[in-house]
Image (cartoon, rainbow, N blue to C red):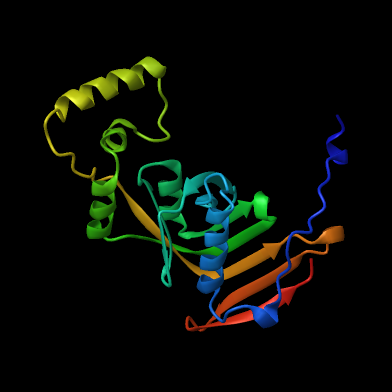
Length: 212
């Protein structure tokens, strides 16, 4: 198989700046609901890219757990590689790709930690197994083998047997406050529709069309 011969023609929909809402969050809400209706596999999966040291970009998939006019939220171990990167440099990007709809959303912004109350509330809503896992995993640290992780799991489950599991102090949420949000709709002949919303003076969103 020649990888260069893999091609797909995009022709499902179009994107018109004259019919788009003034707020990118309204358009994101519409597109996200479209992804749910289309039964996109894990529509809340997004690629988080960081530049902790200012030299080497690093990307990984995380799950969107909340969105509002303030930004996009996810949860993680603050001691993980991504947590350390965001501590060193809070500016980052997110990327949603919904191939079933031939759509992509790119977001650039700054990460801030959610409040303890917000992180506590989400942690309490998680399945018990996921709560235990947050205590077990020393995310991004080296393991001697899977058996080490299984041993830590057994010990943690025993320690919390019959008890309420509280949120670990090293685990919580981030909110990415966007300064730019780009919506990409695949079109024929690689002449895609690209609409960029850019925040001006921290108040209003400016909308422009970009060349594909």
